[in-house]
Image (tube, rainbow, N blue to C red; front, side, top):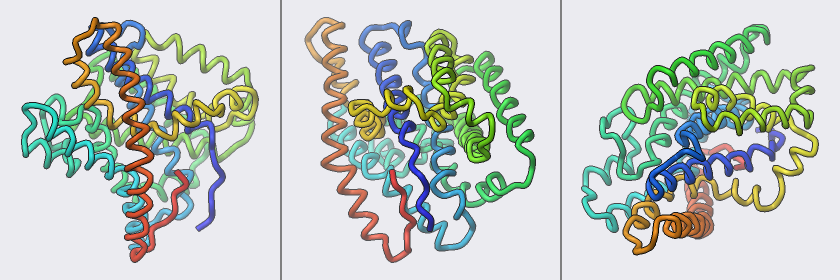
Length: 333
């Protein structure tokens, strides 16, 4: 398999999105307000789109229904996401009062979406991982149809524009969708949008050149900040953030790829999937709310860093080695 070029700026963006989700939860649970961070669950929309974009970049040219590709692709995805899911399911079941065996089994099997109607699973952030698993299962089927279609780029941009309009209407009607069939539809539609975003990016041309400029990055950054108080605008801005992040080659890319932001991106999955335990434990700390919120945030980053280096990396390496018998494809993330 060819080794795709690296899109470095997308890793820091993933880290910033994970911080947005964390900040939203901390403000909501510890301070009783989300005014400064809008609706953090909209960052999950960004994750769904980004996942479709990145997997198209890494696997799109090879995607097919052959047993070797399907087995390798799904095993690589399992190695990437399940170790921390399993560890967190065990920790939450053992430590949190009220955790049940059914909740544990639902968590480790990642079947919350669409089969559970509970407002929140054992791990409050895991619903999105469960929903995205369905996108992984469908990827070998839909990737060739989308990424190798001979339809014009105009059709691609029209699809992107139509989705943005749909997402704005969705937010105005129903807001966030985090369980059941609506959550699955949300995840799949945004994952597919990410694939179309990649198709537009891969075509290059004048649009890609314009998006690579620092001026485009500035406009998108201003739009992203302004959208904090408007969930529909947040969802609409997310595709532009991904495209500009992938295309950017100027000062914006240099800023994004500074050491701390790159590190944040590297541990972003651990930050996202592990935050529920520190958040729950933080509510029992005998401190005033502002101090408690700060302690929880510091605790999440420390806990996530430990999980990333002590569990996520070695477990992924071991599982990939154990799965070499099915010939998994290599993913550079």
